[in-house]
Image: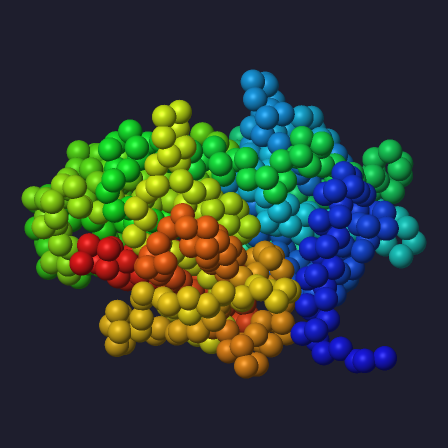
Length: 559
Protein backbone atom coordinates (compact mmCIF):
# COMPACT_ATOMS: atom_id res chain seq x y z
CA UNK A 1 0.00 0.00 0.00
CA UNK A 2 1.28 3.47 -0.90
CA UNK A 3 2.19 5.62 2.09
CA UNK A 4 0.64 9.06 1.72
CA UNK A 5 2.37 12.27 2.73
CA UNK A 6 0.73 14.59 5.24
CA UNK A 7 -0.27 16.98 2.45
CA UNK A 8 -1.84 14.14 0.45
CA UNK A 9 -3.79 13.01 3.51
CA UNK A 10 -4.94 16.60 4.03
CA UNK A 11 -6.03 16.86 0.41
CA UNK A 12 -8.01 13.64 0.75
CA UNK A 13 -9.65 15.02 3.90
CA UNK A 14 -10.74 18.19 2.10
CA UNK A 15 -12.17 16.07 -0.72
CA UNK A 16 -13.96 13.82 1.80
CA UNK A 17 -15.47 16.81 3.64
CA UNK A 18 -16.66 18.41 0.42
CA UNK A 19 -18.04 15.17 -1.07
CA UNK A 20 -19.76 14.18 2.18
CA UNK A 21 -21.46 17.57 2.56
CA UNK A 22 -22.57 17.51 -1.09
CA UNK A 23 -24.08 14.06 -0.56
CA UNK A 24 -25.78 15.06 2.70
CA UNK A 25 -27.35 18.10 1.04
CA UNK A 26 -28.84 15.82 -1.61
CA UNK A 27 -29.92 13.27 0.99
CA UNK A 28 -31.67 15.94 3.04
CA UNK A 29 -30.58 15.28 6.63
CA UNK A 30 -27.96 13.76 8.91
CA UNK A 31 -27.07 13.30 12.56
CA UNK A 32 -23.52 14.10 13.72
CA UNK A 33 -23.76 10.90 15.82
CA UNK A 34 -24.64 8.85 12.72
CA UNK A 35 -22.31 7.21 10.21
CA UNK A 36 -22.22 10.17 7.79
CA UNK A 37 -21.78 12.64 10.61
CA UNK A 38 -18.89 10.61 12.04
CA UNK A 39 -17.27 10.44 8.57
CA UNK A 40 -17.44 14.22 8.38
CA UNK A 41 -16.09 14.65 11.92
CA UNK A 42 -13.23 12.21 11.36
CA UNK A 43 -12.22 13.92 8.12
CA UNK A 44 -12.17 17.29 9.91
CA UNK A 45 -10.07 15.87 12.76
CA UNK A 46 -7.66 14.31 10.25
CA UNK A 47 -7.41 17.61 8.39
CA UNK A 48 -6.90 19.46 11.69
CA UNK A 49 -7.37 22.97 10.25
CA UNK A 50 -5.11 25.70 11.63
CA UNK A 51 -8.10 27.83 12.56
CA UNK A 52 -9.39 25.11 14.90
CA UNK A 53 -6.09 24.90 16.76
CA UNK A 54 -6.06 22.15 19.41
CA UNK A 55 -9.30 20.42 18.43
CA UNK A 56 -7.55 17.02 18.47
CA UNK A 57 -6.25 17.40 22.02
CA UNK A 58 -8.84 15.69 24.21
CA UNK A 59 -7.46 17.30 27.38
CA UNK A 60 -8.31 20.89 26.47
CA UNK A 61 -11.09 22.89 24.84
CA UNK A 62 -10.05 24.97 21.81
CA UNK A 63 -11.36 28.36 22.94
CA UNK A 64 -9.76 30.51 20.21
CA UNK A 65 -11.46 28.34 17.61
CA UNK A 66 -14.72 28.67 19.56
CA UNK A 67 -14.35 32.46 19.57
CA UNK A 68 -13.99 32.43 15.78
CA UNK A 69 -16.96 30.09 15.29
CA UNK A 70 -19.45 31.73 17.69
CA UNK A 71 -18.93 35.07 15.93
CA UNK A 72 -20.02 33.44 12.67
CA UNK A 73 -22.95 31.41 13.98
CA UNK A 74 -26.12 32.77 15.59
CA UNK A 75 -26.41 33.24 19.34
CA UNK A 76 -28.18 30.34 21.00
CA UNK A 77 -27.06 27.64 18.56
CA UNK A 78 -25.06 25.92 21.31
CA UNK A 79 -28.35 24.85 22.94
CA UNK A 80 -30.12 23.74 19.76
CA UNK A 81 -30.57 20.10 18.73
CA UNK A 82 -32.51 20.91 15.55
CA UNK A 83 -30.64 22.86 12.88
CA UNK A 84 -32.47 23.43 9.61
CA UNK A 85 -30.97 24.79 6.40
CA UNK A 86 -33.59 26.29 4.11
CA UNK A 87 -34.31 28.78 1.33
CA UNK A 88 -35.15 32.43 1.89
CA UNK A 89 -38.74 32.12 0.78
CA UNK A 90 -39.61 30.01 3.80
CA UNK A 91 -39.38 33.03 6.11
CA UNK A 92 -40.99 35.82 4.15
CA UNK A 93 -43.79 37.43 6.19
CA UNK A 94 -43.20 35.38 9.36
CA UNK A 95 -42.86 36.51 12.97
CA UNK A 96 -39.78 34.43 13.84
CA UNK A 97 -36.84 36.29 15.38
CA UNK A 98 -34.12 37.19 12.88
CA UNK A 99 -30.54 36.74 14.14
CA UNK A 100 -27.49 37.98 12.20
CA UNK A 101 -24.14 36.64 13.45
CA UNK A 102 -21.65 39.40 14.35
CA UNK A 103 -19.09 38.53 11.67
CA UNK A 104 -20.97 36.73 8.93
CA UNK A 105 -23.78 38.17 6.85
CA UNK A 106 -26.29 35.36 7.02
CA UNK A 107 -29.93 35.33 8.07
CA UNK A 108 -30.85 32.93 10.87
CA UNK A 109 -34.19 32.47 12.58
CA UNK A 110 -34.71 31.17 16.11
CA UNK A 111 -37.83 29.00 15.98
CA UNK A 112 -37.62 27.86 19.61
CA UNK A 113 -34.96 27.41 22.27
CA UNK A 114 -33.98 24.09 20.68
CA UNK A 115 -34.56 24.80 16.98
CA UNK A 116 -32.84 27.24 14.66
CA UNK A 117 -32.95 27.81 10.87
CA UNK A 118 -30.26 29.09 8.51
CA UNK A 119 -31.32 30.78 5.29
CA UNK A 120 -28.90 29.72 2.53
CA UNK A 121 -28.58 32.18 -0.35
CA UNK A 122 -24.87 31.86 -1.23
CA UNK A 123 -24.72 28.28 -2.41
CA UNK A 124 -22.45 25.43 -1.35
CA UNK A 125 -19.62 27.59 0.05
CA UNK A 126 -21.97 28.83 2.75
CA UNK A 127 -23.01 25.25 3.54
CA UNK A 128 -19.37 24.08 3.74
CA UNK A 129 -18.57 26.99 6.03
CA UNK A 130 -21.50 26.40 8.37
CA UNK A 131 -21.25 22.64 8.61
CA UNK A 132 -17.52 22.64 9.30
CA UNK A 133 -18.13 25.20 12.07
CA UNK A 134 -20.97 23.10 13.48
CA UNK A 135 -18.84 19.93 13.28
CA UNK A 136 -16.01 21.64 15.15
CA UNK A 137 -18.41 23.01 17.76
CA UNK A 138 -19.89 19.54 18.27
CA UNK A 139 -16.36 18.13 18.67
CA UNK A 140 -15.68 20.63 21.47
CA UNK A 141 -19.12 19.96 23.01
CA UNK A 142 -18.22 16.27 23.35
CA UNK A 143 -14.99 17.22 25.11
CA UNK A 144 -16.86 19.57 27.46
CA UNK A 145 -19.31 16.77 28.29
CA UNK A 146 -16.46 14.48 29.29
CA UNK A 147 -15.08 17.25 31.53
CA UNK A 148 -18.40 17.44 33.40
CA UNK A 149 -17.75 14.21 35.29
CA UNK A 150 -14.84 12.74 37.20
CA UNK A 151 -13.44 9.22 36.78
CA UNK A 152 -16.20 7.80 38.98
CA UNK A 153 -18.92 9.31 36.81
CA UNK A 154 -19.82 11.96 39.37
CA UNK A 155 -20.54 15.57 38.38
CA UNK A 156 -17.48 17.65 39.20
CA UNK A 157 -17.46 20.50 41.69
CA UNK A 158 -16.49 22.92 38.88
CA UNK A 159 -19.49 21.95 36.73
CA UNK A 160 -21.87 22.26 39.70
CA UNK A 161 -20.58 25.79 40.32
CA UNK A 162 -21.00 26.69 36.62
CA UNK A 163 -24.54 25.28 36.54
CA UNK A 164 -25.47 27.21 39.67
CA UNK A 165 -24.25 30.49 38.12
CA UNK A 166 -26.15 29.89 34.86
CA UNK A 167 -29.44 28.70 36.37
CA UNK A 168 -29.56 31.35 39.09
CA UNK A 169 -28.27 34.03 36.72
CA UNK A 170 -25.80 35.05 39.38
CA UNK A 171 -24.28 38.50 38.79
CA UNK A 172 -20.49 38.26 38.71
CA UNK A 173 -17.76 40.80 39.36
CA UNK A 174 -14.51 41.12 41.24
CA UNK A 175 -13.58 38.09 43.34
CA UNK A 176 -16.76 36.18 42.40
CA UNK A 177 -15.96 36.53 38.70
CA UNK A 178 -12.36 35.43 39.24
CA UNK A 179 -13.56 32.32 41.10
CA UNK A 180 -16.03 31.53 38.30
CA UNK A 181 -13.32 31.90 35.66
CA UNK A 182 -10.94 29.76 37.70
CA UNK A 183 -13.55 26.99 37.86
CA UNK A 184 -14.20 27.41 34.13
CA UNK A 185 -10.48 27.21 33.33
CA UNK A 186 -10.35 23.79 35.01
CA UNK A 187 -13.27 22.58 32.87
CA UNK A 188 -11.62 23.96 29.73
CA UNK A 189 -8.15 22.68 30.57
CA UNK A 190 -6.83 26.20 29.87
CA UNK A 191 -4.88 28.63 32.00
CA UNK A 192 -6.68 31.28 34.00
CA UNK A 193 -5.13 33.91 31.70
CA UNK A 194 -6.41 32.21 28.52
CA UNK A 195 -9.88 31.76 29.98
CA UNK A 196 -10.13 35.36 31.15
CA UNK A 197 -8.89 36.62 27.78
CA UNK A 198 -11.64 34.72 25.93
CA UNK A 199 -14.24 35.77 28.51
CA UNK A 200 -13.32 39.45 28.06
CA UNK A 201 -13.28 39.12 24.27
CA UNK A 202 -16.77 37.61 24.04
CA UNK A 203 -18.26 39.81 26.73
CA UNK A 204 -18.42 42.69 24.24
CA UNK A 205 -21.47 40.84 22.86
CA UNK A 206 -23.16 40.65 26.29
CA UNK A 207 -26.70 41.98 26.56
CA UNK A 208 -28.99 42.48 29.54
CA UNK A 209 -30.53 39.08 29.00
CA UNK A 210 -27.27 37.40 27.95
CA UNK A 211 -24.34 38.29 30.19
CA UNK A 212 -21.30 36.06 30.80
CA UNK A 213 -21.28 34.92 27.17
CA UNK A 214 -18.42 32.40 27.44
CA UNK A 215 -19.91 30.73 30.51
CA UNK A 216 -23.29 30.38 28.79
CA UNK A 217 -21.77 28.92 25.63
CA UNK A 218 -19.71 26.32 27.49
CA UNK A 219 -22.66 25.35 29.68
CA UNK A 220 -25.03 25.18 26.69
CA UNK A 221 -22.69 22.94 24.70
CA UNK A 222 -22.09 20.50 27.57
CA UNK A 223 -25.76 20.39 28.56
CA UNK A 224 -26.89 19.70 25.00
CA UNK A 225 -24.62 16.65 24.74
CA UNK A 226 -25.75 15.46 28.18
CA UNK A 227 -29.38 15.61 27.03
CA UNK A 228 -28.43 13.82 23.81
CA UNK A 229 -26.78 10.96 25.71
CA UNK A 230 -29.81 10.61 28.00
CA UNK A 231 -32.45 10.45 25.26
CA UNK A 232 -32.01 9.68 21.54
CA UNK A 233 -34.90 11.99 20.75
CA UNK A 234 -32.58 14.83 21.75
CA UNK A 235 -29.82 13.89 19.30
CA UNK A 236 -28.57 16.76 17.16
CA UNK A 237 -30.15 16.68 13.69
CA UNK A 238 -29.23 18.82 10.68
CA UNK A 239 -31.88 19.02 7.95
CA UNK A 240 -31.89 20.45 4.40
CA UNK A 241 -35.38 21.44 3.27
CA UNK A 242 -36.69 20.55 -0.22
CA UNK A 243 -36.91 24.27 -1.06
CA UNK A 244 -33.15 24.59 -0.45
CA UNK A 245 -32.35 21.45 -2.41
CA UNK A 246 -34.31 22.84 -5.36
CA UNK A 247 -32.42 26.15 -5.55
CA UNK A 248 -28.86 24.90 -4.92
CA UNK A 249 -26.79 25.54 -8.04
CA UNK A 250 -29.44 27.33 -10.10
CA UNK A 251 -28.20 30.91 -9.34
CA UNK A 252 -31.69 32.25 -8.64
CA UNK A 253 -30.57 34.72 -5.94
CA UNK A 254 -27.66 36.01 -8.01
CA UNK A 255 -29.95 36.36 -11.04
CA UNK A 256 -32.34 38.60 -9.08
CA UNK A 257 -29.38 40.58 -7.74
CA UNK A 258 -27.84 41.11 -11.19
CA UNK A 259 -31.19 42.07 -12.73
CA UNK A 260 -31.64 44.76 -10.05
CA UNK A 261 -28.15 46.12 -10.81
CA UNK A 262 -28.56 46.19 -14.56
CA UNK A 263 -32.03 47.70 -14.27
CA UNK A 264 -30.54 50.50 -12.15
CA UNK A 265 -27.68 51.08 -14.57
CA UNK A 266 -30.14 51.31 -17.46
CA UNK A 267 -32.46 53.65 -15.54
CA UNK A 268 -29.52 55.97 -14.89
CA UNK A 269 -28.71 56.01 -18.60
CA UNK A 270 -25.39 54.16 -18.20
CA UNK A 271 -26.06 51.30 -20.64
CA UNK A 272 -23.98 53.07 -23.33
CA UNK A 273 -21.18 54.22 -20.99
CA UNK A 274 -17.95 52.31 -20.19
CA UNK A 275 -18.55 50.34 -16.99
CA UNK A 276 -15.77 49.20 -14.66
CA UNK A 277 -16.53 46.49 -12.06
CA UNK A 278 -14.73 46.63 -8.72
CA UNK A 279 -15.16 43.87 -6.14
CA UNK A 280 -14.12 45.43 -2.82
CA UNK A 281 -15.48 46.58 0.52
CA UNK A 282 -17.99 49.44 0.33
CA UNK A 283 -15.95 52.11 2.05
CA UNK A 284 -12.54 52.16 0.34
CA UNK A 285 -13.48 53.53 -3.11
CA UNK A 286 -15.90 56.13 -1.68
CA UNK A 287 -13.46 57.30 1.01
CA UNK A 288 -10.59 57.54 -1.45
CA UNK A 289 -12.50 59.50 -4.10
CA UNK A 290 -14.71 61.70 -1.93
CA UNK A 291 -13.04 61.89 1.49
CA UNK A 292 -10.65 64.74 0.82
CA UNK A 293 -13.19 66.91 -0.96
CA UNK A 294 -15.69 66.37 1.85
CA UNK A 295 -13.30 67.13 4.71
CA UNK A 296 -10.25 69.09 3.57
CA UNK A 297 -11.87 72.48 4.26
CA UNK A 298 -12.84 71.43 7.78
CA UNK A 299 -9.34 70.62 8.98
CA UNK A 300 -6.42 72.33 7.29
CA UNK A 301 -3.87 70.39 9.39
CA UNK A 302 -4.79 67.26 7.44
CA UNK A 303 -3.91 68.72 4.05
CA UNK A 304 -0.21 67.90 4.40
CA UNK A 305 -0.77 64.25 5.38
CA UNK A 306 -0.16 61.46 2.90
CA UNK A 307 -3.36 59.86 1.66
CA UNK A 308 -3.13 56.82 3.96
CA UNK A 309 -2.65 58.86 7.14
CA UNK A 310 -5.47 61.14 6.03
CA UNK A 311 -7.84 58.19 5.59
CA UNK A 312 -6.85 56.82 9.01
CA UNK A 313 -7.81 60.14 10.60
CA UNK A 314 -11.16 60.47 8.83
CA UNK A 315 -12.68 57.07 9.75
CA UNK A 316 -15.21 58.69 12.09
CA UNK A 317 -16.47 61.10 9.41
CA UNK A 318 -18.49 58.56 7.45
CA UNK A 319 -21.78 60.51 7.44
CA UNK A 320 -20.16 63.69 6.09
CA UNK A 321 -18.34 61.79 3.36
CA UNK A 322 -21.51 59.92 2.45
CA UNK A 323 -23.55 63.12 2.16
CA UNK A 324 -20.86 64.70 -0.02
CA UNK A 325 -20.65 61.60 -2.22
CA UNK A 326 -24.44 61.45 -2.67
CA UNK A 327 -24.30 64.98 -4.05
CA UNK A 328 -21.46 64.14 -6.45
CA UNK A 329 -22.41 61.01 -8.34
CA UNK A 330 -22.76 58.19 -5.80
CA UNK A 331 -25.78 55.89 -6.06
CA UNK A 332 -26.28 53.07 -3.58
CA UNK A 333 -27.99 49.82 -4.51
CA UNK A 334 -29.10 47.91 -1.43
CA UNK A 335 -29.48 44.17 -1.94
CA UNK A 336 -33.07 42.93 -2.08
CA UNK A 337 -32.34 39.48 -3.49
CA UNK A 338 -30.85 37.79 -0.43
CA UNK A 339 -27.28 37.57 -1.76
CA UNK A 340 -26.05 40.01 0.94
CA UNK A 341 -24.05 41.84 -1.75
CA UNK A 342 -24.77 45.56 -1.50
CA UNK A 343 -23.42 47.76 -4.29
CA UNK A 344 -22.50 51.30 -5.29
CA UNK A 345 -22.54 53.08 -8.63
CA UNK A 346 -20.28 56.11 -9.12
CA UNK A 347 -20.85 58.43 -12.08
CA UNK A 348 -17.40 59.94 -12.67
CA UNK A 349 -18.94 62.58 -14.95
CA UNK A 350 -20.04 64.25 -11.69
CA UNK A 351 -16.51 64.32 -10.24
CA UNK A 352 -15.51 67.39 -12.25
CA UNK A 353 -14.68 70.27 -9.97
CA UNK A 354 -14.29 68.32 -6.73
CA UNK A 355 -10.95 68.31 -4.90
CA UNK A 356 -8.92 65.11 -4.63
CA UNK A 357 -6.08 64.40 -2.25
CA UNK A 358 -2.76 65.54 -3.81
CA UNK A 359 -1.49 61.92 -3.74
CA UNK A 360 -4.44 60.74 -5.84
CA UNK A 361 -4.07 61.18 -9.60
CA UNK A 362 -7.46 61.12 -11.30
CA UNK A 363 -8.23 62.40 -14.76
CA UNK A 364 -11.73 63.90 -15.02
CA UNK A 365 -11.31 65.33 -18.54
CA UNK A 366 -13.88 63.04 -20.08
CA UNK A 367 -16.96 63.96 -22.04
CA UNK A 368 -20.13 63.05 -20.19
CA UNK A 369 -20.79 60.24 -22.68
CA UNK A 370 -17.33 58.68 -22.19
CA UNK A 371 -16.84 59.18 -18.44
CA UNK A 372 -16.32 55.82 -16.71
CA UNK A 373 -19.04 54.36 -14.53
CA UNK A 374 -17.65 52.59 -11.46
CA UNK A 375 -19.70 49.67 -10.22
CA UNK A 376 -18.49 48.64 -6.76
CA UNK A 377 -19.83 45.35 -5.37
CA UNK A 378 -19.29 44.14 -1.83
CA UNK A 379 -17.48 40.86 -1.24
CA UNK A 380 -19.11 37.68 -2.51
CA UNK A 381 -18.65 34.44 -0.58
CA UNK A 382 -16.81 31.50 -2.18
CA UNK A 383 -18.71 29.84 -5.02
CA UNK A 384 -21.23 32.70 -4.90
CA UNK A 385 -18.58 34.77 -6.71
CA UNK A 386 -19.07 32.70 -9.87
CA UNK A 387 -22.84 33.03 -9.79
CA UNK A 388 -22.78 36.79 -9.14
CA UNK A 389 -20.18 37.60 -11.82
CA UNK A 390 -21.69 35.20 -14.37
CA UNK A 391 -25.12 36.81 -14.02
CA UNK A 392 -23.73 40.36 -13.93
CA UNK A 393 -21.82 39.94 -17.21
CA UNK A 394 -24.81 38.36 -18.96
CA UNK A 395 -26.69 40.77 -21.28
CA UNK A 396 -29.76 42.32 -19.67
CA UNK A 397 -33.09 41.56 -21.29
CA UNK A 398 -36.10 43.73 -20.58
CA UNK A 399 -39.53 43.66 -22.24
CA UNK A 400 -38.37 45.72 -25.22
CA UNK A 401 -34.74 44.81 -25.96
CA UNK A 402 -31.44 43.30 -24.88
CA UNK A 403 -28.77 45.57 -23.37
CA UNK A 404 -25.13 44.51 -23.68
CA UNK A 405 -23.15 46.65 -21.26
CA UNK A 406 -19.70 47.93 -22.18
CA UNK A 407 -17.63 46.32 -19.41
CA UNK A 408 -14.09 47.68 -19.77
CA UNK A 409 -12.40 46.26 -16.66
CA UNK A 410 -12.96 43.89 -13.73
CA UNK A 411 -10.93 44.57 -10.61
CA UNK A 412 -10.90 42.37 -7.51
CA UNK A 413 -9.48 43.71 -4.27
CA UNK A 414 -9.60 40.95 -1.69
CA UNK A 415 -8.21 39.95 1.65
CA UNK A 416 -6.38 36.65 1.69
CA UNK A 417 -4.03 34.42 3.60
CA UNK A 418 -0.38 34.81 2.67
CA UNK A 419 2.13 31.94 2.54
CA UNK A 420 5.48 33.70 2.13
CA UNK A 421 5.10 37.03 3.97
CA UNK A 422 3.20 38.53 6.85
CA UNK A 423 -0.03 40.35 7.65
CA UNK A 424 -0.42 43.57 5.69
CA UNK A 425 1.69 42.51 2.69
CA UNK A 426 0.25 42.66 -0.83
CA UNK A 427 -0.25 39.76 -3.25
CA UNK A 428 -0.78 40.03 -7.01
CA UNK A 429 -2.25 36.94 -8.67
CA UNK A 430 -1.13 35.76 -12.10
CA UNK A 431 -3.30 32.65 -11.90
CA UNK A 432 -5.82 30.92 -9.66
CA UNK A 433 -5.49 27.25 -8.72
CA UNK A 434 -8.43 25.43 -7.15
CA UNK A 435 -7.69 23.43 -4.02
CA UNK A 436 -8.60 19.76 -4.33
CA UNK A 437 -9.26 19.80 -8.10
CA UNK A 438 -7.26 20.13 -11.31
CA UNK A 439 -8.99 23.41 -12.26
CA UNK A 440 -6.71 26.39 -12.80
CA UNK A 441 -6.98 29.74 -14.60
CA UNK A 442 -4.19 31.91 -16.00
CA UNK A 443 -4.70 35.57 -16.95
CA UNK A 444 -2.81 38.77 -17.62
CA UNK A 445 -3.00 40.90 -14.49
CA UNK A 446 -3.15 44.62 -15.28
CA UNK A 447 -1.58 45.37 -11.87
CA UNK A 448 2.16 44.81 -11.41
CA UNK A 449 4.85 45.22 -8.79
CA UNK A 450 5.82 48.57 -10.34
CA UNK A 451 2.44 50.06 -9.40
CA UNK A 452 3.43 50.08 -5.70
CA UNK A 453 6.15 51.92 -3.74
CA UNK A 454 9.47 50.07 -3.72
CA UNK A 455 9.45 49.73 0.07
CA UNK A 456 6.08 47.93 0.08
CA UNK A 457 6.28 44.10 0.30
CA UNK A 458 4.54 42.83 -2.86
CA UNK A 459 4.48 39.20 -4.02
CA UNK A 460 3.41 37.94 -7.45
CA UNK A 461 2.37 34.39 -8.25
CA UNK A 462 -0.46 31.83 -8.20
CA UNK A 463 -3.23 32.13 -5.61
CA UNK A 464 -4.97 29.02 -4.28
CA UNK A 465 -8.77 29.25 -4.25
CA UNK A 466 -9.78 27.16 -1.24
CA UNK A 467 -13.05 25.46 -0.31
CA UNK A 468 -13.32 27.48 2.91
CA UNK A 469 -11.32 29.55 5.37
CA UNK A 470 -12.06 26.96 8.05
CA UNK A 471 -10.32 24.18 6.07
CA UNK A 472 -6.78 25.57 6.01
CA UNK A 473 -4.22 22.85 6.70
CA UNK A 474 -0.54 23.61 7.30
CA UNK A 475 0.87 20.63 5.36
CA UNK A 476 -1.37 21.18 2.35
CA UNK A 477 -0.56 24.89 2.23
CA UNK A 478 3.18 24.24 2.57
CA UNK A 479 2.89 21.88 -0.37
CA UNK A 480 1.32 24.60 -2.53
CA UNK A 481 3.96 27.10 -1.42
CA UNK A 482 7.12 24.95 -1.56
CA UNK A 483 6.38 22.81 -4.63
CA UNK A 484 6.61 23.89 -8.26
CA UNK A 485 3.22 25.60 -7.83
CA UNK A 486 5.05 28.35 -5.87
CA UNK A 487 1.71 29.67 -4.58
CA UNK A 488 1.89 32.95 -2.69
CA UNK A 489 -1.47 32.90 -0.90
CA UNK A 490 -4.96 31.51 -0.52
CA UNK A 491 -8.42 33.00 -0.90
CA UNK A 492 -11.99 31.91 -1.63
CA UNK A 493 -13.37 33.89 -4.58
CA UNK A 494 -10.74 34.68 -7.23
CA UNK A 495 -10.89 31.38 -9.10
CA UNK A 496 -14.68 31.53 -9.16
CA UNK A 497 -14.62 35.10 -10.51
CA UNK A 498 -12.12 34.11 -13.20
CA UNK A 499 -14.17 31.08 -14.21
CA UNK A 500 -17.16 33.37 -14.80
CA UNK A 501 -15.05 35.94 -16.68
CA UNK A 502 -13.57 33.27 -18.96
CA UNK A 503 -17.02 31.83 -19.62
CA UNK A 504 -18.37 35.29 -20.50
CA UNK A 505 -15.52 35.88 -22.97
CA UNK A 506 -16.17 32.50 -24.62
CA UNK A 507 -19.90 33.28 -24.89
CA UNK A 508 -19.20 36.72 -26.36
CA UNK A 509 -20.79 38.63 -23.47
CA UNK A 510 -17.67 40.73 -22.85
CA UNK A 511 -14.65 41.67 -24.92
CA UNK A 512 -11.45 39.62 -24.85
CA UNK A 513 -9.68 42.94 -24.23
CA UNK A 514 -11.35 43.55 -20.88
CA UNK A 515 -8.73 44.53 -18.28
CA UNK A 516 -8.40 42.04 -15.40
CA UNK A 517 -6.96 43.12 -12.04
CA UNK A 518 -6.48 40.98 -8.93
CA UNK A 519 -4.76 42.33 -5.83
CA UNK A 520 -5.01 41.01 -2.28
CA UNK A 521 -3.79 42.23 1.08
CA UNK A 522 -2.75 39.67 3.67
CA UNK A 523 -5.26 39.48 6.50
CA UNK A 524 -3.56 36.42 8.00
CA UNK A 525 -0.76 33.92 7.61
CA UNK A 526 -2.13 30.45 8.35
CA UNK A 527 1.40 29.04 8.58
CA UNK A 528 2.42 31.30 11.46
CA UNK A 529 1.16 30.83 15.01
CA UNK A 530 -0.74 33.91 16.16
CA UNK A 531 -1.41 35.11 12.61
CA UNK A 532 -4.31 32.82 11.64
CA UNK A 533 -7.80 34.24 11.15
CA UNK A 534 -8.67 33.09 14.67
CA UNK A 535 -6.16 35.63 16.06
CA UNK A 536 -8.53 38.48 15.21
CA UNK A 537 -8.96 41.22 12.61
CA UNK A 538 -6.15 43.48 11.38
CA UNK A 539 -7.70 46.69 12.64
CA UNK A 540 -5.81 49.89 11.76
CA UNK A 541 -2.88 48.01 10.20
CA UNK A 542 -5.16 46.92 7.36
CA UNK A 543 -5.88 50.50 6.24
CA UNK A 544 -2.67 51.15 4.31
CA UNK A 545 -2.62 47.98 2.13
CA UNK A 546 -6.37 48.28 1.51
CA UNK A 547 -6.06 51.84 0.22
CA UNK A 548 -2.82 51.20 -1.65
CA UNK A 549 -4.67 48.63 -3.76
CA UNK A 550 -7.77 50.82 -4.07
CA UNK A 551 -5.63 53.75 -5.21
CA UNK A 552 -3.95 51.67 -7.93
CA UNK A 553 -7.30 50.35 -9.21
CA UNK A 554 -9.01 53.77 -9.28
CA UNK A 555 -6.04 55.50 -10.92
CA UNK A 556 -5.81 52.85 -13.63
CA UNK A 557 -9.52 53.15 -14.40
CA UNK A 558 -9.36 56.96 -14.43
CA UNK A 559 -5.99 57.27 -16.21
